[in-house]
Length: 183
Image 1 (cartoon, rainbow, N blue to C red):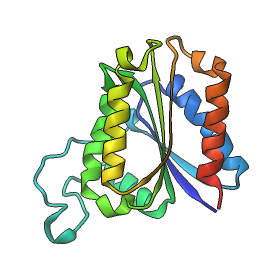
Image 2 (image 1 turned 135 degrees about the horizontal axis):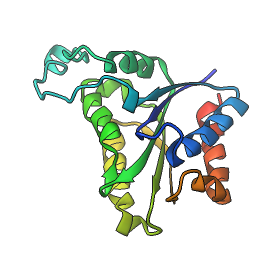
Image 3 (image 1 turned 45 degrees about the vertical axis):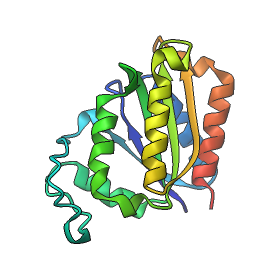
Image 4 (image 1 turned 90 degrees about the vertical axis):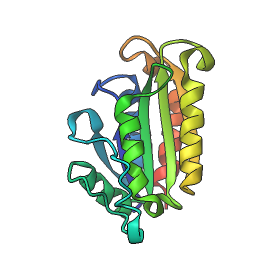
């Protein structure tokens, strides 16, 4: 059974990015996979201190003792990672960026992992909204970490729940879930 760690980077527990993530989860379950969700906004995660403790002697262990330690252990055990974030101020949410920065401590844990990325934004244009910045940032980070990006799904939705009306995007989300969950 394939395990996926789902990272929700929105301050809204039931916002558009979470709605999209739930459709991916439906696909994971239909393929026989399992998942565990981390709602970053409700966790105690401190910013990286750039001390390089994690990189000394290849420790891959952060000196900061907070909720990231639980996420680190789950990522190490998982086969895949699903990241979901709204676009705020032309990039991923602060919550997701904090998570990404702290993953500096575990580069080999992400190597070879399958990754799905979900982004939602208010404007209809991915350039005007800043989604393109987030896409490039995520592509660069996960390619650097030698993870396999299966798909980057993104779509416009301003009002809560509006993303669910985007049938083609929801279908792609379900398909991404089946790819994450299949053996």
